[in-house]
Length: 230
Ligand SMILES: Nc1ncnc2c1ncn2[C@@H]1O[C@H](COP(=O)(O)OP(=O)(O)OP(=O)(O)O)[C@@H](O)[C@H]1O
Ligand SMILES: [Mg+2]
Image 1 (cartoon, protein in one colour):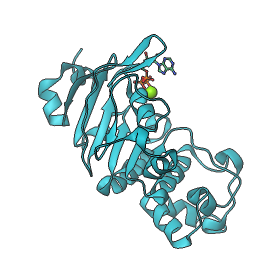
Image 2 (image 1 turned 45 degrees about the vertical axis):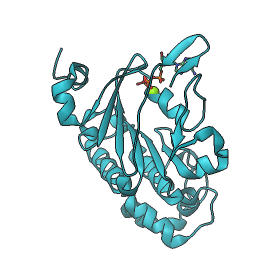
Image 3 (image 1 turned 135 degrees about the vertical axis):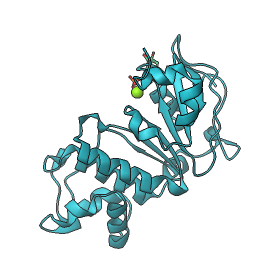
Image 4 (image 1 turned 90 degrees about the vertical axis):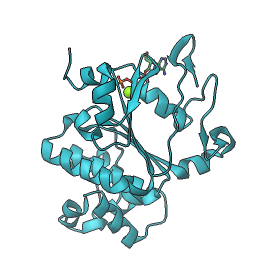
């Protein structure tokens, strides 16, 4: 599969298969093509040649609605609106309180939410001003859990977080991945250790694929990213 932005080739000759329940990490230098790959999955762009299929069906044959119901993205830019925690988690869908609480628990967010004056009925500030970065991100994870998508994409944004929040988010992520296909764009390679498949992208191509252990042996690029080799 290929992706061009105008004349510029962002991805070239990408061929990856992912199975149910797999946890896939995308790693690589800046500009390597990680976000481009994710943009293709959510049909922000379509490939210039080749295709992406889910269970054999070209994703262009799904309606955008069904694609949106099957894929959730958690990015570093989390939009919080001036509504209750519950409404922020349900995000346009009908609010089922028990489901909201379950989602918050899985996202490692219920603890701090239950300490708010009105629990899940507490109204949040716009832009989440009364929440920390890590708390906002855990609300975004709860939102993704609430949708219960088949595919979850996580643009890891742990660099701005203290190590305690980072650990909470990593744990929340691990709670999530069990019955889904998960893609994590990992900036910190410590979070990808448990991935079933790590895809190393370089200049728009797959430079190596394997588990952490396999890549230690097979990929000097991976060792470089891990800071283990010059
Ligand atoms: N909308 C766009 N228009 C034109 N070129 C783009 C666009 N988005 C990305 N590119 C280019 O495509 C290539 C791949 O970029 P991409 O954003 O996928 O990299 P990345 O691996 O996500 O990098 P980072 O780690 O910095 O987020 C880069 O050369 C980039 O400049
Ligand atoms: Mg990117």
